[in-house]
Length: 134
Image 1: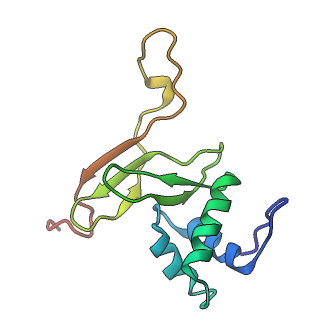
Image 2 (image 1 turned 120 degrees about the vertical axis):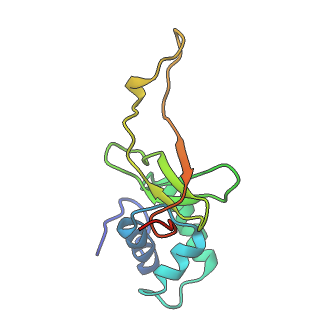
């Protein structure tokens, strides 16, 4: 996968990190990004991952996903220029998954004059992998 980055430095490491996030179906921690990026660039280090995450956030290609009590995770920005902010966090294994809930900014009922710009929703429970039921 070769992604073109306008007006920014395009390195093998940056390509690998963005590809990791592009392939992921859920937000990843910097440590998870590092581990997966090493499949493509074995010599990539922590500092490079953190620096590249900052660059990609600044460029608007990825976004931080913050869930109360957890360190930030990162995900590719969706079509329309935003990261989907509806997530499910498994209380057993700690994984965070993107979910699609039938809630949009248009569905919000706010007092006159309020203008929402985003909604962040996190559901908690047990994921399919951790669920004891068949």
